[in-house]
Length: 186
Image 1: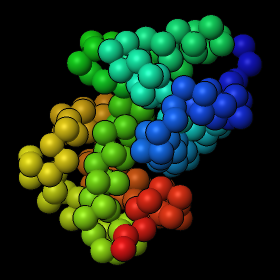
Image 2: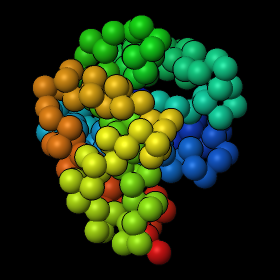
Image 3: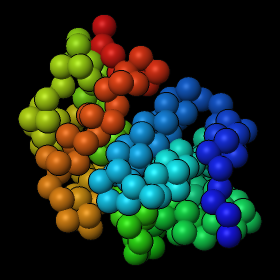
């Protein structure tokens, strides 16, 4: 089966997602997934990137049915590995993250959102964000309260890495895209 092109993935995201915030999140997770691919599966960078880009594509239009629509669309595109990874990216659904792709998406999603949230409260944005600050904010349950810290830990555990390493990779992945992502600070 042919790999889903990045262009096709981007078009699908745009057709289902109008909001800037969710598009930025999708792009940030894509960048994190690219970084994880470079660490674990360099030959699969496009697969990782497109999966990250599409993981929440149906959330804005059909939040009550998420991720069923994007999973079905991926299956219709003959992308079962991507579909399984998207289905598994939220542990509360009970779908096991069996592949490296699924484990990476699980690790990337909530952690990337959390790192971005940390950038929003720093005058220097991501350019002045140390890993230690993110780790400190993880302990503050009131900060970015909707972020499931258990998801972050589960993703790290499945990849066999410490959250310190994941956070560092996310910061590195997002730094050059700060303006595009709105995390450049004030």
